[in-house]
Amino acid sequence: MLMNPNELNKTLSKLPLGEIKYFESIGSTNDEALAWAANDAKDLSLVIADEQTAGRGRLDRKWFTPPDTALAFSLILRPTEDERPHLPRIVGLAALAVTDALKARRLTPQIKWPNDVLVLGHKVAGILVESVWSGEDIDCVVIGVGINVLKGSVPPEEVLNFPATSLEDELGYPPDRMEVLFEFLDNLITLRPRLSTDEFLNRWAESLAFLGEQVQVELGDQPPVLGQLLGLESDGSLRLRDGHDKTVAVRFGDVRLRPLT
Ligand code: BTN
Image (cartoon, rainbow, N blue to C red):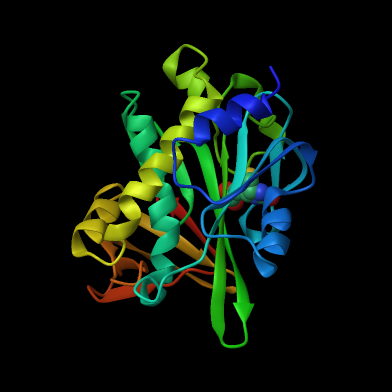
């Protein structure tokens, strides 16, 4: 069933959001949100679409959003002065808002650093955080979130880089897209004031997939880093123990994380 914009507005009116733009079909909600953020979008404004025809993932990958099946939205944050030193943690904020919504449904999600949410080793959601700059400063952050809600949202196997699943597959029933969206936003709004705290960083680190395991991090055109996944640095970088027993930090960027099997 298509999303009903009246129901969407009514459900989300319970949250302290900015404005909401709904599209039956759009290229990419992140593109729309970036353009809006560069203009006058208020903090916590939302762009949401039933279908994306040019959805984007990290590392220039395509993100599949067929109609009536998925959640695809972009939330605009105008960071406060207190939040500015912690902007690299925003991807963790979004990932924890997803994992909390899934835990409420008794699933056991994990975060595949930096931006994927897994259930039993299969990807169920992806996050793409992009920024709008004003000179040297970040003016706005756009949090793009894609969640495979119904079975039909899982891309065909031949185009997958990583095994994928949907909430419907994992739960055994089709959850309501609107409820999942509401819970994500509610969780993010609740967690946001704790962004700078150690408690936040610890929760994020404890949710990581492959914690304590040997992993391989591919770094664009540089040699991969192999090591044991120890946790996170204060700025959200990944902390590994390499083969020489040295602690190394891997920053965000052109990175792919794989378990070393
Ligand atoms: C990834 O896994 O690489 C990130 C995927 C992010 C997809 C979402 S769907 C809503 C928003 N609009 C986009 O074009 N991308 C993000």
